[in-house]
Image 1 (cartoon, rainbow, N blue to C red):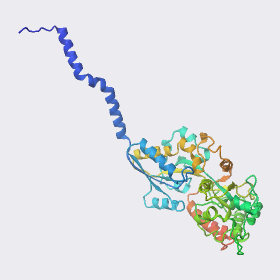
Image 2 (image 1 turned 60 degrees about the horizontal axis):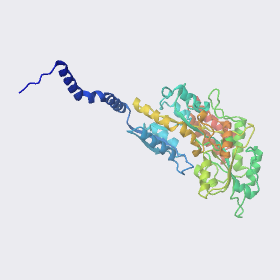
Image 3 (image 1 turned 30 degrees about the vertical axis):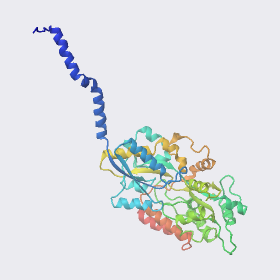
Image 4 (image 1 turned 90 degrees about the vertical axis):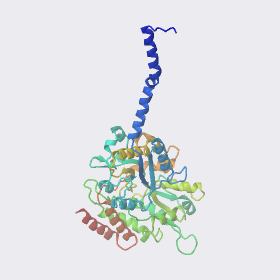
Length: 447
């Protein structure tokens, strides 16, 4: 047999070809392998697990559901972050604050919950400071009063979500039936207000007793529906300069007298005003249609619109609180809502909680706040109520919203003051004695 002879160069080419055939796939695929490894590594270091979230109902006027907006946001976030699951539980509108306080006491706090601009909760040391997770551009995009509401000790303790205020709702059908004119420009003096609600209190069924009332509200801790009247003469709850309780003196007494006189002197309220529940008061206005004037949060606009769409509502309007000696239509309450993150042991989970909050409060969500009847906390979102004259007018009244003030014992102060307000309204104490007794008890908390 003839032996084949290979020249050195030919042998080299053959060996090079064999090496290429064996290793080329690995060489050519190396960038793809590196990318794959990188992706796997990134997913491995990204936190996975369950984040617990609590929130109050927020009616979406486009769906009629109370939690549709947050459930949509949760689904979006879970899809974009595989392995992260959001466990959502509702908070009751009336008892939610107590639920959260009990959870704090029993070390069973959720990961995320609405803290509003609740200085007491912020000052308890149960929340995570969020400054290092927000760049300067993110902080600067918020309206000043929104970011100020979540600041304490030069740290940011929550991410603002929306703003609302209190205003006065009118059943315009009752106004029409009695031939009473509502305030034409949305403003009325206290005397005009009294004249109006007296004309709207009457006996409809002919039994000799009033069954339609000019005004109704309720007194309850953490509820400030009626405080636009309480503060109409210039009273101030917490001194903005020194942080001390400041609701006493002539302006405080006259404001409480105005509120109590609605029931005791002018008799323009249902008999249970002062001891009724929020749901009873709301039902008297929105469902039973027995009340012509009712103060409430701006988000009630969407509830009333929803009732109209179901054929169960009525023609309604919105105006400012009656103007007293303060000279402006005052509304009161902490108007900024924000979410906070409760203390975390895992830094990576904390980062994921922040990521979720940023998703909840992104610009897209701000533009859709019209669905909830509230207002953006971000400066450059633009006008979201261009086609809604009612909400545009309410937005103009936001500057009249007077914050309660900052105090570390606010929940106790609130309980004491609201109880004394109730005593005056039901006639158990004079307005002067109620204000005096409130101050005496609150002074014991401060010193």
